[in-house]
Image (tube, rainbow, N blue to C red; front, side, top):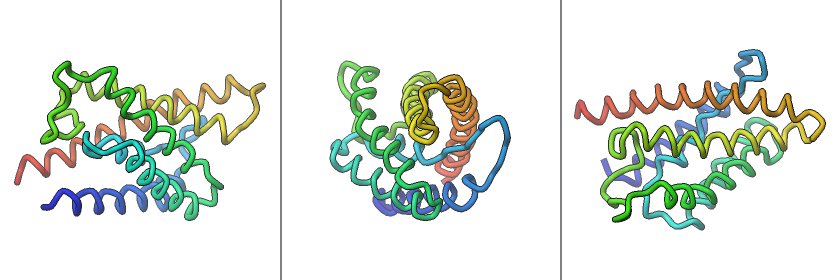
Amino acid sequence: MNIIYKHIIRFLVFTLLQALVLNQLNLGFGIHLMIQPLFIMLLPFDLTVIALMGIAFLMGALIDIFSNTYGLYTSSLVLLAYLRPIVFKLYGPREGYDPLKEPTANDMGASWFSLVFGILLGLHTFWFFLLEIFEIGRLGFILQKTILSGIFSFLFALLIQSFILNNKQKK
């Protein structure tokens, strides 16, 4: 399948999954599953920051429209897209990234993926809940939601990625 079509399908599936399913789940303890950071993470290495931020803006705006969240998803996804190349550069190989590989656990290794995605997801969820609650006096609650949502979103993202990779390996 053409790589552009693959990313368009991922964009639509992840956007609809987040907006129509995951935003309706109430898991308790402030847990909010977020799968859209995985889409930004899985985009090709050679995309520019402007392209990443544009895609993140579009995805966030669509989720915000469906969820009536007034820019929470847009802001946090644009921040994630801005920070992605910086974190990739910090934890990248000396020779640079192979443009034929994808930023997945299968191509880059589970430890690299866990570290990089964990950092990006942590920053994304912290910014999301900081804007959602918008009270520095409730920093403990913000951190609780960030940690719990980050852990569950990370595990959910690994589960989804294993399904995507299993389908790719079977073909």
